Amino acid sequence: MSQTVEVRFKGTRKGYFVWGDEADPIRIKDVVIVEVERGRDLGRVTAVGELAAKKCGGCTSCAVGETAEEPAALKPVIRRASAEDIKIHQEIRQSEEAVRQKVIQRARAHELLMKISDTEWQWDRNKLTIYFTADKRVDFRALVRDLASLFHTRIELRQIGVRDEAARLSGVGRCGREYCCSTWLKELSPVNLGLAKDQHLSLNPSQISGGCGRLLCCLKYEHDFYVTTRKRFPKEGKTLKTSVGAEKVIAVDIFRERVFLRHDEHGSRIIPLEQLRTEVEQLGDVFTTLETRSRRGIGKTDPSSGN
Image 1 (tube, rainbow, N blue to C red):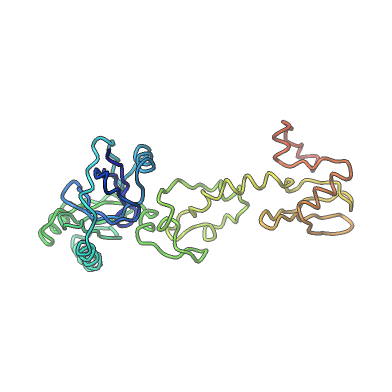
Image 2: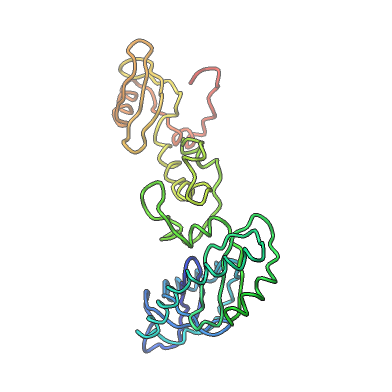
């Protein structure tokens, strides 16, 4: 029985294929030669079997601008790549920057307002894909004819967004690590400003934007953690009865499990969340967090009450 195989290529491009040799099962990280629309290409296996089939069935984009095929139409994995195949692949990759510079020169000669981000040869050199960004629609038909006569191969120009460009080119983010979209985060989902507000982050664009100039991807995949964790803490601005008296919650530190409180007479203090919970419950009050309010069906407090 054949297996569905996910194969990734340069940048964020990926495709789904079938492996039919049951006696010699394919494995993750194997480098393979696959059949594509116009010849053969080389990539690395990133998923096999049921996982690959599931991803293929729910995939909306095998590559930037490409639509996933149905499993019945998947093309085959031809074979595992040999050392010579890999050597050819490396030589091709090393030549792509020189190709990009030539494309930039031709685009300038045609006076086209476009930024050439990257170039990618197909392994057998039957196709050259050129990735670019542009603010407006670009008529590049004359450029394609010019490049086809220069490189003597099929030319495909593909316009991508700035987030896809950052994923392809990679870089170092504000956290000091390589971009998530270039390493493990292969599916880019929309990010909106409301996520930063929920996480109580600065709304200064320079503080919450990534190298692409758009909102940080981590705002999206970290959002559930912030929302879930904050349910264990009292709402900021709420007044609680503690061992000191009536204290107002100024801020919460969800990572260190601390609460910042302020008393009108005794000033401010910082205490652990569990200590605050104990003090409140010892006074016979209920430590009402967002979580318990939701569970009991308690409505929102009256803003005029200050609680």
